[in-house]
Image 1 (tube, rainbow, N blue to C red):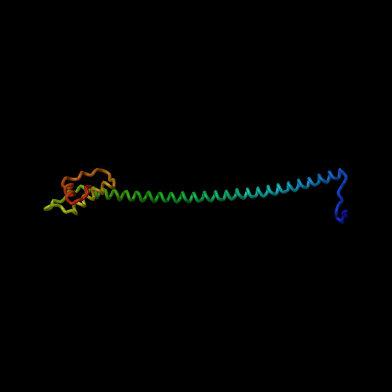
Image 2: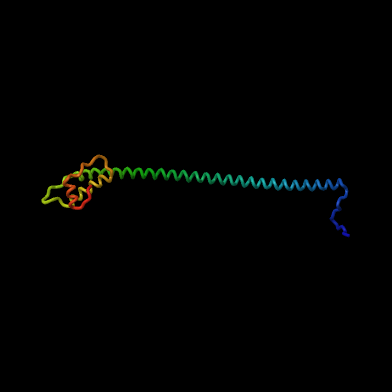
Length: 156
C-alpha cells in the first residue's frame, strides 16, 4: 500500500468536486490553447506584415530599375537616330559622287582607255546601285559594256 507524502493532495471523491476539478483543468487547457493561438496569430501577422513590407521594397526597387532602363534606352535610341542621320547624309554625298563618275564618258585615247579608267566607272556605277541612291542612272554605253567585257570587269 502506498503512503501519501507531504505536498501530495488527496484525490477528491465527491462528484461535485471532481466535476469542478475537471472544469478547471478544461478551462486551463482552453486558456493555454487560446494563448498559443493568439501568439501564433501575432507571429503570423508580424511575418505577413514583414513579408508585405519586403514585397513593397522589392517593387519599389524594380520600379526604379525599370525607370533607369527606360532612360538608358531613350538615350541609346537618340544616339542611334543621330548616327543613322549622319550615315544617311554620308551615303547621299557618295551617291552624288558615284552618279557623276558613273555617267562619265571614257576618254578617247589611242588605242583604247585603260583598264583602270573602265574599272573606276564600272565600280562607281555598282556602288550607286548598291547604295540605293535616289534618282536614275543612265544606262551604260555600248563602249563601256564592250570594254568591261574585254577587261573581264563585271558590268555595273
